[in-house]
Image 1 (cartoon, rainbow, N blue to C red):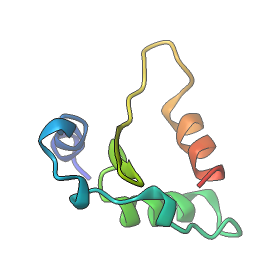
Image 2 (image 1 turned 120 degrees about the horizontal axis):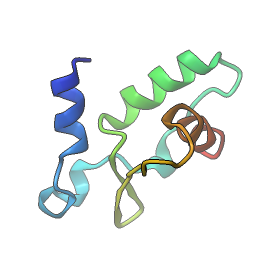
Image 3 (image 1 turned 120 degrees about the vertical axis):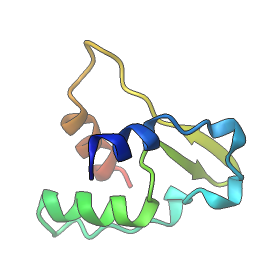
Length: 82
């Protein structure tokens, strides 16, 4: 994925996205026996945009702050709980 493609995912305005167009992460299944790289690939393939998802009927915008935990760690923590 290019930097431009990643920026487009990050910049999606959740207010303008149809709720039904977002992946419901309650329905995403990731094989926890797979290596981390494979789990990441499977999750990204299932949700499309990891920054804009749905949990049931609620739209969720995912953001990371400067000075917080690294993206890699936050992403792995999220995968452990999917």
